[in-house]
Image (cartoon, rainbow, N blue to C red; front, side, top):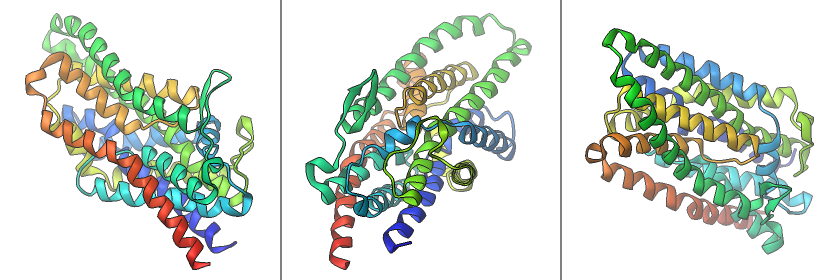
Length: 337
């Protein structure tokens, strides 16, 4: 393997780990917020379902992700490496500061910036709507931007539907709601594995094969690649993201069991729908937005608006920052040859 191919493979593995770190609040935060079980029990629950989701994932999201790049075969490895490492470095920097930023958004920006630097305008698959499916940069970006808004609105609606029912329950009869939160959190973890797991799998499979197009039906991703990516994603949801979990669980607003049930259910529905349509959206952004939606529904005055604005600011700079960083990495690779 060439040096660029080695960097691309390592970058894909690092991406799987960082996706796990940035996704750590997705299924854990609601359970931590409820304080019903220890962090270890909650983490074990999340890891198990995330792993299952990664193993059962198809290839449609992976094909969309890798399909953002349209460069010559000899440029594929450095472009994939630059895209991965720009997303990894930026996500790690923000996560260390407690921001639930998106490695997925960073990856889209990184791949686009690297492909542009390597192949110019034609090196990027701009795409749009093809065969009723969002593809390419112009197809993926609107979906990534719309998903948080949709998740927030759906969570708000769910919260207002569930709340009247919960108010009529006696304290002892509220257990079904708590069980529902655990089930909804499992659905989020499962959806997380099916969506985010495919991104690292796709990059790793393309890096090893040297082909930017994956075969449909799962044949483009071998089981060793699938298992490795799924395990890394699942394990790092609990190994490196506790500070981000705290940010989402307790610093946005103090939610109730009903709110957590509505937020997790809304997030799982949006993420599953995106995976079905092949959209590599930011799962952490969707979950955080769903929690904000329940806050707007129940106690807008108690929502930590300053914290929300800080998170939004980090999201907005992620894509251009990673695109520029990846382009610079490609230029550095050219100079080093």
